Image (cartoon, rainbow, N blue to C red):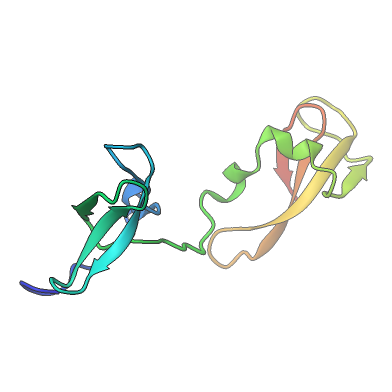
Length: 128
């Protein structure tokens, strides 16, 4: 990179860690990253109208392997997932229903994995 040290990208939980997706202002198609070997810079190229712009960041792709939010990823539609095992005879503390789906989820720090039960009637979640 010309003009000084490379800028490090850090994870601060912001949207800047999302994989960039650019739209061509001329034709509305997706812009793709392209290296300009002469100037050693990153450009954005439209493969339809051949527009070429300077990229504002060197970030091309993010592959973050860490789970975000843990339990918050399991939404109310999880109870309709036919691949999850079902448990009968487990009473929900919220509505009293006796059927739930369950799955394993990682817990914080060194707690390891826990079983998470989710009521099939009200989607209330509890750990075991």
